[in-house]
Picture 1 (cartoon, helix red, strand yellow):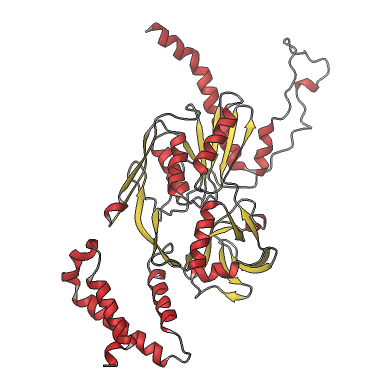
Picture 2: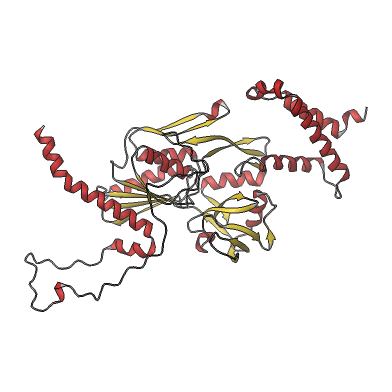
Length: 437
């Protein structure tokens, strides 16, 4: 009678009950696959029992089961995870816009923590960490073999406390060490400014719950100072975030139309998201900047505006995260973050593991302009003829300073200027043609 209610017997019964009472979505597979899963579940129960009675250190049953759950999710894909109470709270604070840590969006690759993107203004960004960097050690402890949640826990700590990271960077022959001080990360999701009169710039650092409203407000502030000749939407090193916010942001620059759709095995994972009618920017010429740190929601925006022929996408290939994660609570303090669907651009492109390819590729580079300040021009010659209209040589424009600090942004502004010039030159001819009709 005792053996009937032993932990092993209870475990076997619970596993079989869970399997045989599977949701309707899995019911069709139960009969044809019953033999293999039942054998596998018995094997699992036997292995569980061998560990609990024979492992060199005693581990309680609940901890051992948590290890088993973590192992299942770790072997699915880099974005599925078992969320403890602390991890679930971290997920919620990340989408609300304030949390403590180093300020990096991370994933797993070959057992190491890979930096997807540093967050603007964070200790990681200020120290020069880059998208694609691999974290090899944390305070001397090897990262390989740790789960993503375990690595994140090591990176967290009291504000101001130091942590040493060993970084492996593609293109660099040797790893290097860097020490960061933890800080409270307050993500300014959206900021805007003018690059030159009439040419606006909106930076979206992360897609949070209120990002759509924030971009709309930033756009209104720019437009309040006069019609826009062009606009740059900067999504570089934006790791993504809330799906709904990406739909809202893309919709601000579209006059209706499909933004993104998702497909998965469950019926409720197949969704279509469309923009509302009315382009909030008034159809201003638009360039979207992306790079290898642009992921997930950033790729939704770039892909939609590219497919709908609303913007020119410039920069380098994006990260390639085209999957949707659903958080499923399993208790009051535990949840599972599970990849349940893939998303597709309006033209049916899957971004997963391929990313968005820019219309115009511009690599980030350090550009130094030639010093032409001492160059002799006609205006320097003696006995020259003065300009009959009284004009003098114009001073260096504000945008030329971008060339040495951000060549990608400089190229985006240059393209917008070209589009604006062509539009002005063609306007009289177009107006005349319309009048002839």
